[in-house]
Length: 79
Image 1 (cartoon, one colour):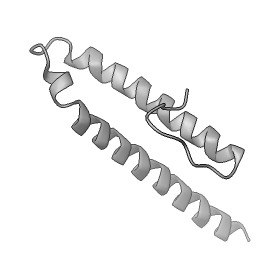
Image 2 (spheres, one colour; image 1 turned 120 degrees about the vertical axis):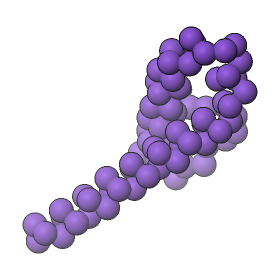
Image 3 (cartoon, rainbow, N blue to C red; image 1 turned 30 degrees about the vertical axis):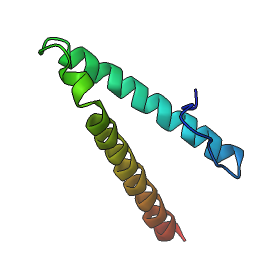
Image 4 (cartoon, rainbow, N blue to C red; image 1 turned 180 degrees about the vertical axis):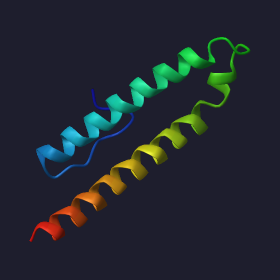
């Protein structure tokens, strides 16, 4: 599901799909991190939740841009 924190501005269906996929990946990763942090003190995950969200979004952005750059390099090699 698309995050309801604000309107998603998208010009194409592919952008909406990408936004939904990004949110699903973030939610899955956060749930896995929640399982990791559940044995720590109470509230550690909640206290650092904004920083964790920012870090996860940064990692997702970096991985996706590197992947796109690799696709561009591969496509230039084939032509």
